[in-house]
Length: 65
Image 1: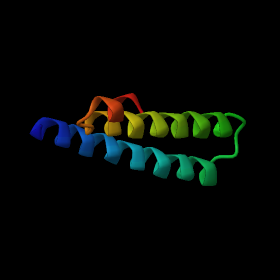
Image 2 (image 1 turned 90 degrees about the vertical axis):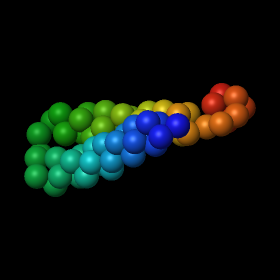
Image 3 (image 1 turned 90 degrees about the horizontal axis):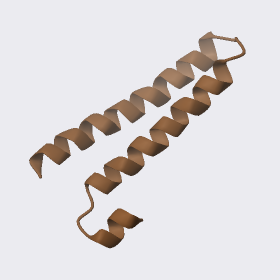
């Protein structure tokens, strides 16, 4: 169980950094692929947070959710 907590901490940190860098890209870059990269970043963030919740779940009903 200890390894899952380290992995969860890593994944949450990466999700926070993804949001941070998406905001930096939006403010510093005005090119046409900026919106697409931000959407991909937020989709990745949503997926990573869901996977982290799945790793920390104890019951099958929580894992399915």
